[in-house]
Image (cartoon, rainbow, N blue to C red; front, side, top):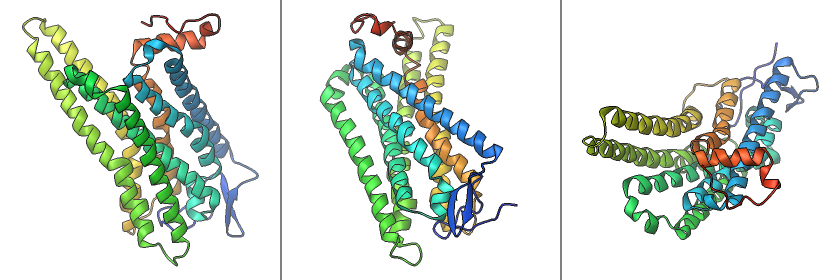
Length: 328
C-alpha cells in the first residue's frame, strides 16, 4: 500500500503521485513505474505533441500566407506562441516535476516549473481576452474596427499580455523565495499564490471575457431579429444557433478547463479540507490541455486556416511559392 503524506506547504495534497516514491524524505520518480504511471506519461506526452503540432501549424500559417496578415490573426499568432511554449516547456517540466512532488518538496526546478506554468498560462488567457476585444469591435462596432483595432493597437495588446504575464511569474517566484524564510506560510505567499495571482491571471480576465461575449451575443441576436423581414425564419434561426454555438464553444471550453483548478487553489487553502493529489494533478493537466484545444477552437473554425493547414501538411508550400495564394 502506498504511504499517505500531508503537504507542509499548501495542505491540499494528501497522497502520493503514482509515478513517485518517498525515499529519505525526498519525493522522487520511481525506478519501477507501474502500468498506471506509464499510461499517464504516454497520455501526457501525446497531449504535449498535439499541443506543439497544432500551435506550430497556426504559427507557420500566419507567417507564410499573406492573406492571414491581419490584426486578428496576429493576436491568434501570439496565443499560439504562448500555447506552443506551454507544450514545449510546461508539459515536460510538469511531467518531471509534478504538482504533487513540488508541493511536497519544492526546489529550484519546481520554482522554475511554476514560473513558466503561471507565466505562459496567464499569457494564453490574456491573449484570449484580447481576441474577445477584437471580436467585440468586429461584431458590435464594425465601422470603428479599422481605427480601433490597428496593427499598432494589436502590438500594444501583445506586449502588455506578455509583459503582465512575465511580471506575475516573477512575482510568484519572489513569493516562493520569501516563503523559505518563514516557518509556516507567509502572508505574502498566501496572497500571491491564492488570491492576487488567481485574480490577475484568471478571475479578472474571465469577467472581462464574459461581459464582452455576452454583449457580442446580444448584438448578434439583435442583428438577426433586425433582418427578420428580409430573411426567412429558418435562416434567422440558423444564424442564432450558429452564434450561440460558436460563443458556447469558445467560452465553455475555456471555463471548463480553467475554473475547477482555480477554485481549488483559491479557496481550499483557507479551509481544513484536503484534496487527493490525483485530483489536483488532473485539474492541473486539464488547465494545460486548453493550450492544446485553442488551435482547434480559434483556427479550425475558419476555412482559410483549414486550407492553410492542408497545404502545409501535404508539403505543397515546399514545392513552390504559395504565399499569395487565395485561401478559401
